[in-house]
Amino acid sequence: MFKKRYSKIKDERLVNLIATGDQQAFSELYARYKDRLYYYFLRMLNHCPDTANDFLQDLFMKVIQHPEYFDPSKKFSTWIFTIASNMCKNEYRRLEVRSRAHSDPACFNSDDSRKEIDEQDLLVKQLFIELDKLGNDHREVFLLYYREGFTVKEIEQILDIASGTIKSRLHYARKHLQQKLSKHQYLFLND
Amino acid sequence: MKNFDQNISQLLNNDARKHQPNSQIESRLHQTMLAKGCERKATQNSMLDFFTMLFSTRFLAPKLAFGFICLILWCFPPGKLNKSNNLTLADSINNFHNETVDSAKIYSTAEDSICSIQF
Image 1 (cartoon, chains in turn green, orange):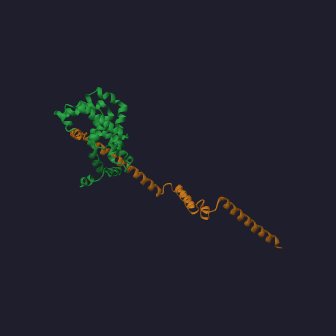
Image 2: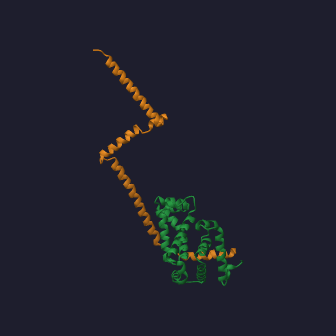
Image 3: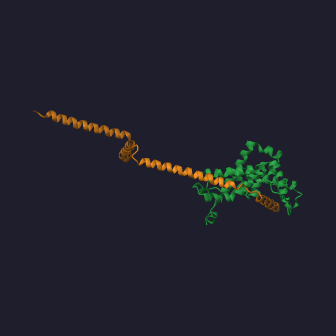
């Protein structure tokens, strides 16, 4: 009964309910965003599942402890991804993952605990190896656009950068991937 | 280009489905939330303690003194005269001066009348 009711409530209202200590509201909000944010952290932070789990927990801890920081006039999805993006930037500064990402592929492999690795997995791996070469800025814009489905305007709000920069990064990433993944022709059919 | 965009999105979505966060995170976060709820309750309890103290017989003398001061201030608020009559400080001083002069006159008249009494 409760699930049905909470599933109809908007994200922004759920944050207000969390501020009053509503556990059900938190469960609903967590269910809506956990997979998206986990995948974002996983791909942004050296493809390391442990780090992604830690960051996901920290992020929701922030939401629980300071729900009042959320501005209800703004969209919750852009707000939470702004926090996630800032957390990644802080992590890059702290650990200099930027330089390590290329030299240490061990973490990338560690998340492939599954036995079945199909062609798609290999393609994804190749895709992220190429995106890692472009750098975190391009990878971030690429993920927000292609995976999260944010518009350029929304990415502008999340990353606080000009729309021209976002379009340029997307174009460059697309071009780079088309060159490097040309053997996977099905990706570029009807282009 | 549209086809490329769609294929990439599809590829990433399929990949995302294969990666799930640790299931224990949610229960940990719920515990944190419960703890925060307890903190809130503790704050409410401390407020309750304050009101209990306020209406109990503990610290009766200072509470009565404070109440008396509040009563005086409520009955005779400072600046009430100035606000109600739109009088300035100078006007108040003048009024005080005139009243003093009047009192002195009355006193002197009374003194004169006493002096004029002949025994």
